[in-house]
Length: 201
Image 1 (cartoon, rainbow, N blue to C red):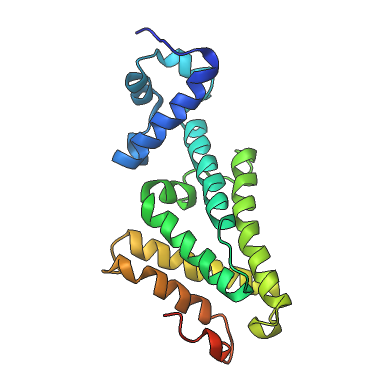
Image 2: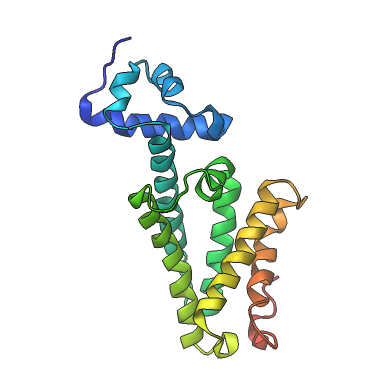
């Protein structure tokens, strides 16, 4: 094989092609050998950028978390509770749009934790957006002053579980996702939400 890629371009092109392969065929299809064929380069050329298949998958997952963080940060709502709801909706939309990437990011294939520090940092960066949105809602007087840590864990568990059920086909109508994401947010409100937020579903 021969390559027309400059050294600096190959990493970017490899990630783009690996993302396409992941989207089309799932994580099992993403190997360095398959990627080399797709790029029309030799496998040793890829080993300059990825030590092994795990490092390639870790790079894909890392970019997934960076993109998830970007999409969560793009949610702009003046009201803290509406922003929290919007973040839940954006999280679910991300999973629906890229189910194979989402499964890779959260599927446990890249454990143990610490093996890929950049991936761990990217995951924590995405999680920090949710943490901040919970803190903002508490500061605004929502959530009845519950502890931030358990609330964040509960919010993530609810939205993540909903996303998993959706992409695995257990919830039949994906169009219900925005309204159900809003309902999931309301479940975090002991005693019910303020009346002016009751009409979001």
